[in-house]
Length: 274
Length: 287
Image (cartoon, rainbow over all chains, first blue to last red):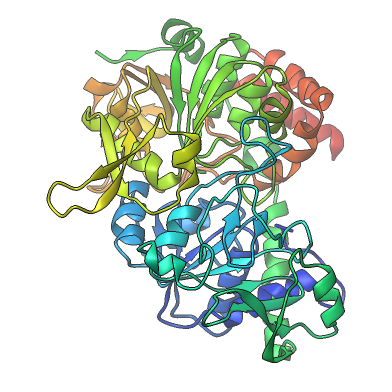
């Protein structure tokens, strides 16, 4: 799920998801990127159609152009290309909580129909069945970015009727509850590997808005843990253009190559003893 | 006065069973050599603090060094799970681990408060923060006395010992580091004692005005350990070994494979140089 997958001609569903997410990012926006697929989508957007987007990683690197997709949120390519590197306290306080982020990316293990997220535990908190990574920057991105995009694999155990732990807030239980809780913003889309869901304006429940090429409504119903509905105008998403495909393939291949380069620390001759 | 010590002597002298320790580094400058030396010296019952416990804390917990973990995100960034940490939390192996879990934002203000010797840090709070519920000891609500805004108060963090890795020290013990510094300054100042491993000790720091210099009089000990952050990286010196991070999942997935790796590369080696030679010879065998 996290590393770019080498493929032949056909796009994998995950790759379609990456391209669909990249399309939602535009020039002159300030985007708080997460690792994994969000990072792939953000770097694809920057290469393909949004060279003037500002990408920020939580390591405190602002305005980066790493070239390939970094593996971690603090790779050297982020530091060496950043317009500014700030301490993390400044990033979360003066940039995120102060309202300077237009769009934040969020991943999670579970999402509910109102876009609330669980990235903490499956099962009991004290003795969980599965211990997930935890909050990191997510709850504050979810609360204080002007908008967010959620990326998650479309499976019944992931798009669930009820979260086992609420790590990050979407629209709480809908119908304006988020606003009443004192928060603006909120998730504008959930991107899966089958479809894009968007919140209905009144209920704020996420409904299927666009479907990827070759995917059926039945497939989506079967893979969703709640009784998912389809927007009236729901249609198939535009397939990737040849330019998008070419740009993505190059980014993916260059990224894989860069990650496999052996480290000079342990592949060269031993250093002289000082 | 700053002491210049071999790493093994610095750990023996300054890190004790039951201590509250921070080995920080946000993907950058992670003090791996120091962590491995703690494993070699078989420290126990440690409280480990870090925003992002990664492979190094997976190793320390897997080796049974820790009693408690204070953190905000545990995972191998871009790769997946830390299986030794999960084994401890999910199954209590090698023993159970007490958790004090916060968000990145809450941790950064707790570090800054610790550095300033204040009892708490403050962030913008928000409704329904579930971490406040499961970790009420570290999170409390507070009404701003000026505006009435409901804020989140976070308990300050002050480790007994902070260990960092840096680019250079001069012969007085002034420390230079550059690149992504994350929370390094705050955690250096929050600790009772600061130990720094460095790539090299030099007569004069190769600094520009905006490089972070920690003054010698807050540094307890300096240890020269070339490549001491490997497999993480030192900006401008050597790159992160992403291939190693990608392979870690297979090593840490099973208790047996993990123990074999630790036995061979950490416990059977004398020091960080021996550790790197051991990895180099394994790489040579495979090639």
